[in-house]
Length: 193
Image 1 (cartoon, rainbow, N blue to C red):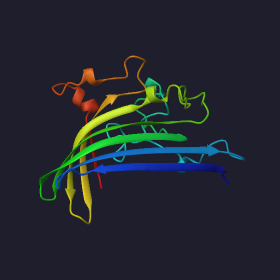
Image 2: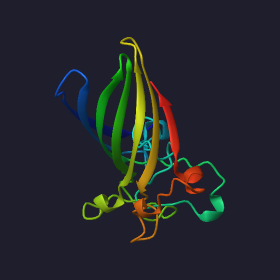
Image 3: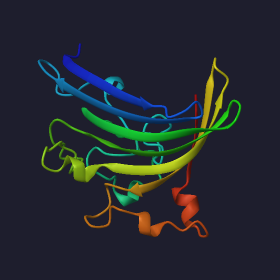
Image 4: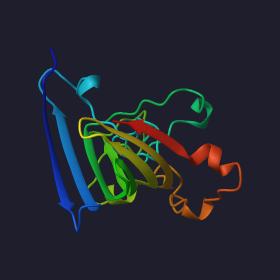
């Protein structure tokens, strides 16, 4: 059996200036530590980021841990990165369009880390002095179909900061070019409820 302890906390703040508009801020922090007979937390309990429920500009489980990036010769292999520590935040402005049809502008940031450095994944250990330099950032626009009993979300997101790029090249805002092949590699659609 596995021995580990985990703690996860979430803070949400809603500001509603009127019936049609809402600003929502969310912060999630999680920490897991193996102990006793375990050197790692079970895979199914580890944290991950990317995908429709957190950092929408990146494919699920494709970010981290830390600044780690899979070798280039593994680019065609599905990336499945998990970690012991997570930090995520997002800010979303929601507005009405027509009845149950709504829109949203959002920005997401976060990453995962390991408690202990993994020699197979350099740059993966959490360090208090540098963690904020390792955050992935994405932004986008979305539509909401709010039927009171179910909410369907469709989001289009683009990455603004890729923590796994070489130092000084992480911010990719300057590369945004909607009229080129850039779209194919950077636009990410997410559908969720």
